[in-house]
Length: 92
Image 1: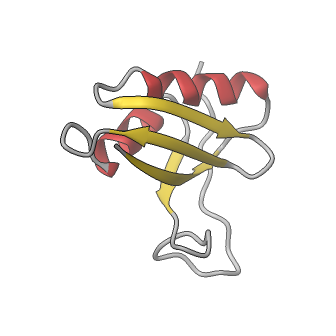
Image 2: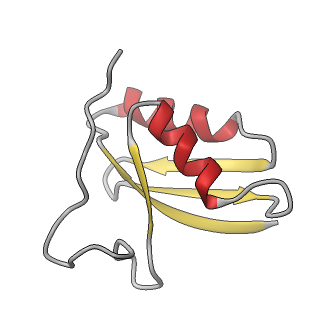
């Protein structure tokens, strides 16, 4: 099992947290998913033989939010440090 921390964009309430946790938890290979609204991060424990970042990102996107990779310092990979990731509105 491997643990990854993802940045999550577009959340504004506890219901959003539950939607993201549910989307991640439903994926084959996820052992545990915990989402923190205050830090806008998800910690996912998963079987890397069954699942990769792209599948997690797609599941979060399908739920109406944005998932992005974080580096070791917790910064969005490939984004400017001064700018927050673009956020999506939930369509439900």
